[in-house]
Length: 289
Image 1 (tube, one colour):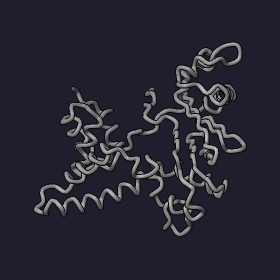
Image 2 (tube, rainbow, N blue to C red; image 1 turned 45 degrees about the vertical axis):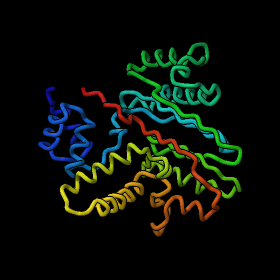
Image 3 (cartoon, rainbow, N blue to C red; image 1 turned 90 degrees about the vertical axis):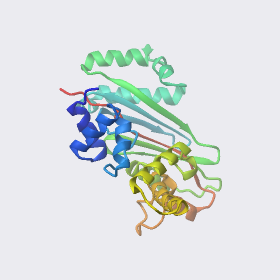
């Protein structure tokens, strides 16, 4: 497979590795981007790359949360240029799609697009608006989250509606205040955790990280049990980076408390059940003019 300059550029942007190192890695992997990233990481030449990839498309995150914080909605609606996101037509369309998700509770994206919207459907409305604006529009994904009876939601929408977050909490004793709940959602937007807690991390992910760490250490004469302890210690650092409860809470003025410990100070019963983080254009390549 021919390795193009664009492929080298993309790999360099994702890993921070040198141009020639990226080209070599792509050649060795026969153009497989994920395999090339893994090769560079094993050689210690790349930072860990998010599976979501770089943000490269325009649009906005439409949102809704009920007054009682029991129901929340996020919808990603894409377009080709940032200019269109600021138009009344585009913003009104996004709002209507959010309302449809809230009221109709579609099972998946196909069901959403087939749902009635006025005298037509969401899909037909999208097509008509595409023709009117002159840019390709698209409802890409959505999430509709309901809190448990003894729980609540918190939502945060980052400036420009480019990032949206919903955090679902268990709060059996009603001790979680609205401000703290929202600040954790802000933390999710800023720090981009991948899992709530380490028990949620798939064994396949852990095994791959351990494999990469061992490759980075190279040949060593240390006993296997010592190597295992070293890798286990390194994995602890990984968990503090990717697990929400173990990340240092950005709102802690002393910078010492993790998100999990900060919530437990309010009440031991408060737990994060799940979170949704949407960022406009994750994994979508922007068109090249």
